[in-house]
Amino acid sequence: MTDTPQSYDLLPGAGDSPVILHVPHSAREIPAAVRPGIVLGDAELERELDHITDAHTAAIAGAAAEAAGITPWRFVNRLSRLVIDPERFPDEREEMLAVGMGAVYTRTTHKDVLRPDDFDPEPLIERYFRPYARAMTEAVADRLAATGRAVIIDVHSYPASPLPYELHGAGPRPAVCLGTDRFHTPPALLDAAREAFAPCGETGLNSPFAGTYVPLEFHEKRAEVTALMVEIRRDTYMTEPGGPAGPGLSSLASALGALVDAVSR
Image (cartoon, rainbow, N blue to C red):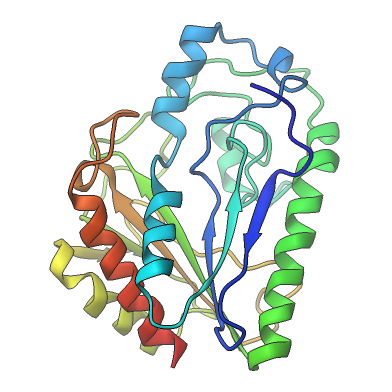
């Protein structure tokens, strides 16, 4: 666990591609300077990372980019979401604060203590959250300038069985959950996703996870920025928790690549 000068990578795609594959939760890396603020022992931390990490989603996005006819851009978080979660609101708007999982987590997936109650999140937000948000905003603005639109496809995964931290874990857990936003997810984008992922099993809508990620500068302001969250149930492509990928990864990557092509035209 070593320090990292930049917490994310923007991997270029085709100049005429409007698509950004956003991979926020695939990494396990925790900088050495951040580790002392986490109260878990090393073995406990590794178990928590097994549960909280969207394992292999960067590989799925990478294989999808290679398969797509028009190469999408990829914005990949290289640090664990236990450092900061770039998709949370950094203030009281965030509903996951109820379980200690705002922009900086203070509780684990099983509601145990991750950081002390008096932990100050501001240094982590300043060091990691804000630069990440600025860079993602710039990436979206660049696609708008180049193509007149931007399509953000969030690539996530979730466990087959609910974890205690989940606020909405009682609903369906399909092979692929599609998270939508009333402003930023047009019907054509949702239809394309349903068609692309049909070979991978049942698709569902906004259960167990809902919503999409759009940088605040564009949120509910620019309809040319469209967004969809793709949540893949982990048992369809890997051994849970935290185990190796299996043969399902390639079919999911092909489906994601087909979605990229469908919305790139």
